[in-house]
Length: 321
Ligand SMILES: Cc1ncc(C[n+]2csc(CCOP(=O)(O)OP(=O)(O)O)c2C)c(N)n1
Image (cartoon, rainbow, N blue to C red; front, side):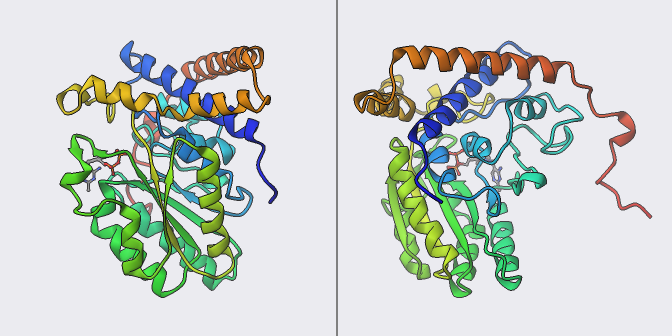
């Protein structure tokens, strides 16, 4: 794969930011029962996703990775149908909670509600790929809080021993809901743990999508060429509460959030593109207008889509005999 077009990365990031804002509004208006914001994580998810090949690689994402879904072909209509739990929600036909991304057609496996059990599934996919000589890399994501769970350690150990084509990605936003990272690990970087498993560990700034892309590309190339797994830690900040059920004023100051917004990945990348003469206010306004229409189309489509039928309520729950 050649170098990605920075304007395409920016389009995915802005689309994600604006979709995220719209989903949050719908929740506040009482029209969507649950929202999981990803504002602040766009540079991370867009940056790494452009280092993957959606035609052959597998994605087992973190729940804040909407930008990566776009890169894998998920549409805004899909996301809104998932939000409203419609029958045509490609993630689960309206069965799973919002942000449980998974779309078999697009090689995306659902994350697990018991966090982060899906990391073990990702390692299983990578093992299957190795056995089948399938030249595919599996990328899996989780947060800093989840990085201290046993699933992650066992997965990394197993993957390193068997040199599996998998990349572990920790999006470290400094909190597991209200628990700050200092209270769940005694080291500075999650990536420092990589040495303990015998794999490379990298720390990268999530406000710089091109730096994330470079780190991800190194890890993906290593996995694809038989070099085994890597651990990529992307430092980010979550600007909104953990979910729509959380009140983040209880555990962090507004000053801290405002300070973090100075490193907003969307704003910083836009500034860089403008400085390089690749972007300007006119193009920005046109793209925002285009995205607004896309969001309104998706909202109308999802609101008018049918709910799952009651007759389907037990499908996939009990074995058919
Ligand atoms: C086994 C398990 N314990 C607790 C929860 C509830 N829970 C959901 S997300 C979350 C915090 C995860 O934090 P982190 O991994 O840092 O990711 P972030 O939400 O910050 O992106 C918790 C405790 C869960 N889903 N599964």
